[in-house]
Image (cartoon, rainbow, N blue to C red; front, side, top):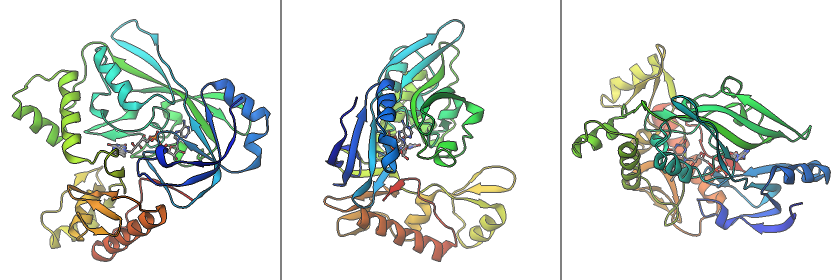
Length: 341
Ligand SMILES: Cc1cc2nc3c(=O)[nH]c(=O)nc-3n(C[C@H](O)[C@H](O)[C@H](O)COP(=O)(O)OP(=O)(O)OC[C@H]3O[C@@H](n4cnc5c(N)ncnc54)[C@H](O)[C@@H]3O)c2cc1C
């Protein structure tokens, strides 16, 4: 049975480097731990926050909620016949280490998602995506612990309602389930190499790699990400702070009359996605520092903690950015980061 501790510092458990304290904290290493906690009444007393690697959270204040850290490990091949392999991964496994494991074993499908911080269990929460690939492309099923009933259940992809940085776990099931493992289907041969993303294709072309394999793509993604994004170990951040807004074509048309170089990507016949980083940069926030908080000098979408910032300060900074983008472009930016009070 996991020990329930009081007043635990979360400073080393979030990539923004916020020195928040959890009123109550427990860590689970096995599925049995969840069952024991349920039997002890742990889930009945207070509201809960489930923590993975803390790379997509902003602890706004001290945390009055009970924090449950998920540290379930294990990578198991559960089916290996044919051209694909089914891999079941414990929710607490480090995502990037898993991607490395896949590439080292010659399994394809997740190489574009290299170097995304965090745990495997959190990957379905916002259907992580990068460089033209989203988790849902390789997703087979997941298992979760339903807090109210104490039962373990499984969901296939269509039950997860995956969308852009979205799933049922960010909505109807938020805080109600603990994801315990995720099963992905990876390719063993005839890999579907995806270099549709411009900077990835350019990088490989510059390296004169015209027939990239999964390791080439993995290496390229790692190199590009290292050059663009701050390493949380040296500069606290939670990656992209806002989602890229999706706007109706008519809104985009009006904006493009004023800003002819506005980057955009068609989402479907009616809507267009605009990079939030571009909007924030045009609003004058790129590299701007106010006290201990700022936006990253190479990517305006990343809010950084220059050291000693509080969650509240970062939150207020984000709101200022949000307001000025709204004022200038009429577009409401929605946070991608989970704000925890
Ligand atoms: C430098 C940097 C770059 C990033 N780049 C990307 C990127 O390219 N693409 C992208 O999609 N994201 C990116 N992110 C965001 C982040 O890495 C991902 O969202 C990641 O999946 C979060 O994992 P985590 O374990 O840290 O989750 P946490 O931050 O701990 O939690 C995130 C949410 O998931 C919930 N949660 C976590 N684990 C579980 C579980 N086992 N069961 C139920 N709920 C759970 C939490 O309650 C919370 O709501 C980046 C972040 C950083 C710091």
